[in-house]
Length: 210
Ligand SMILES: Cc1cc2nc3c(=O)[nH]c(=O)nc-3n(C[C@H](O)[C@H](O)[C@H](O)COP(=O)(O)O)c2cc1C
Image 1 (spheres, rainbow, N blue to C red):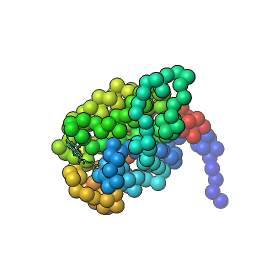
Image 2: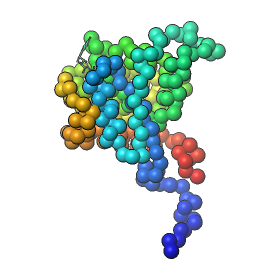
Image 3: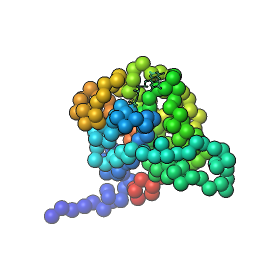
Image 4: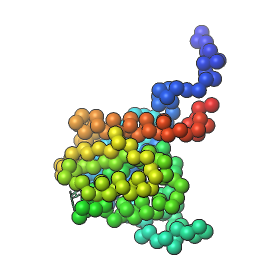
């Protein structure tokens, strides 16, 4: 008969045990609204290669967000429902992973708009964030996103902020996930985000450890 050592079950889980036993959620945000977007496909590929205890949810509300208006962001103001949903999704996620194209050396307006809606809230500060780039020639948008996300007090995770040079190849998520040259770095991105979550000092009751 299998026996359990009660004292060993009662002790807090080590970091390794937490990684194996607890589940994590990553909110993936693509900066492109294009139907066959490479940035969206790579985030779908991340979902495909993530281990079973990591759920990657692709945010689908970018196009529905109204233009940011500080008048709707005052204490006491009622935020639009789409904004409330975005904030709730970010708040519920352990980490956020953004993949964005560059437009005219800048961040796509729709993505910057979403970030602007998150500036004053409590959902994104101190949250681990990764930043993917699918184009080796795009530099400006990611430098700008880096600056914006630091200003928003997120924890930018260097090992989760990489360029995966799809470089205009129109690959599906399945094809990206099947190619080790892309899938392996994406698995490493997930591991880096999870590590950042684990060391972010969330209280034991919140991570399900008693
Ligand atoms: C209006 C527009 C402007 C662009 N400007 C740049 C740019 O300044 N620098 C760059 O590297 N790529 C630029 N691109 C190329 C896109 O960043 C590239 O096609 C991207 O991979 C598209 O991402 P998606 O497949 O996720 O839609 C531009 C594309 C468009 C449509």
